[in-house]
Image 1 (tube, rainbow, N blue to C red):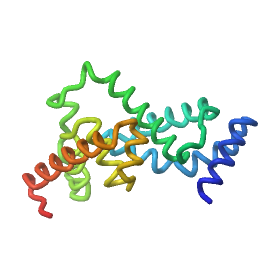
Image 2 (image 1 turned 45 degrees about the vertical axis):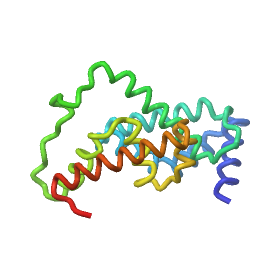
Image 3 (image 1 turned 180 degrees about the vertical axis):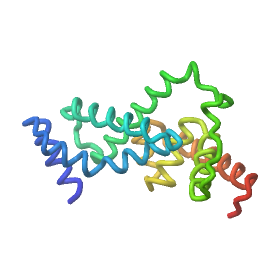
Image 4 (image 1 turned 90 degrees about the vertical axis):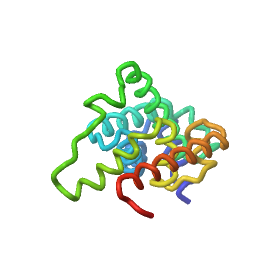
Length: 179
């Protein structure tokens, strides 16, 4: 039923440029797309919102290319991953894990410390590891759908998940978190 409703809305947008139908898709998926970017940007709300907006603009512009071979959400997450990869490619020459921008100081607020620790742990992962780990552990996607979203082979996704989870486990254990 959910997929049929999405397909109906997509066809209204593609055929009639129905912005109300697209708004309904945005309302339905904006929270999950923003949350995905929030984890990918390690809590940078402004950047997450900008990347989410880029994702929905690209989805609107390219909606006639949606063929319905996968769920609309999978197609949308694929666009989100491409937006993220494009952002990382632009950022790559100046990004340095040891830079002062990459290292955030801990907040005095205890409630924020856990969130900062998780983001600090996610910061240790490569871009593709972080994407795969958050898609599985936070967004709940199965491996085959992560492969479809990211455009990676299933084996590659499994490798990124294994390495990413190992790095997270080591970092969190080293910093006092136990299973």
